[in-house]
Image (cartoon, rainbow, N blue to C red):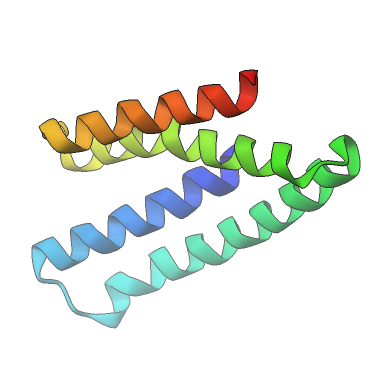
Length: 105
């Protein structure tokens, strides 16, 4: 699941980077589409296997969202070298607390 989430986030951020650079060519857009297709296959397999192993779709969903919560800031910082603003940081912290509450409660 982590590989799928990472690939999905990477293609989203690369696409945003293309928009930032003003590169509207199809050649630049093909690579993020291929990576996103691979990510989709990984995520579908992870959900399938996760549900078979755990038997609870909510646990699988929480793992997916938590991996998004942890991976997305790392990928964004690695590609854009930007730190979040005050509002985004507060939202990130509240999201982390929500995921923690879901797992622990």
